[in-house]
Image (cartoon, rainbow, N blue to C red; front, side, top):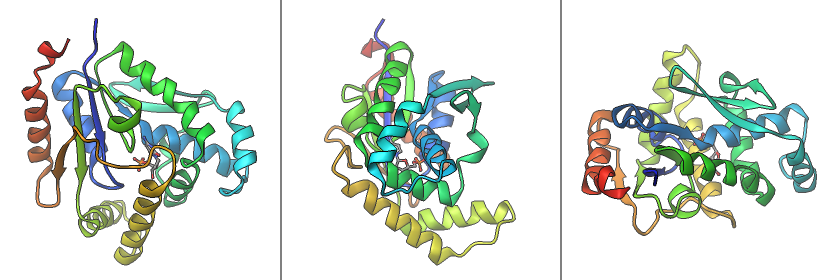
Length: 227
Ligand code: DC
């Protein structure tokens, strides 16, 4: 059986994970959040006190890391050497470390095969930075989801406020721009729109409108026909 793969790429805070999770539920696909895998690796290096610029030690440490995914009631959990670290990887410190260490080839190679294997064996919506361009170049539907940095910062600001965390909008926007720059300008698998990806700018769109646009893009290439 050929599986149906949907690739969603885009910059930080574009809403990829929220949208991909909901679209996956609508389609009955598995949602694969590849950012969580990179985040789990970053957490490992942070815990070990490894410097983000120490490429040699990071490359060596990759051999001691095992990342796997589990699904609890349909929600992805990421395991780092058997420990569920899903609740520990969403801090700003981890975000910045993740963007810094994801430039290194050994880090990316570690996760590439696992990501491809998941997509080979089941229908997936996979989100990240290099899914349409590198991980799943043959995905039947590719989406590049973006929004202005200001809108993305505002969304993040509101999210943090709702959790009762004090934050500064300008700082958040600055961090987002910094992370975008690093993700787009690295040598290996930089973030860019795949030539055959559908561009969706969600700056002025609701979540439901974006999901609808994705379902339409999939409908153009009916999953049943793609098999
Ligand atoms: O999607 P996210 O914010 O959880 O991703 C965190 C970082 O991980 C992002 O800044 C770059 C890196 N990443 C990557 O290099 N390739 C991916 N496919 C997914 C994430």
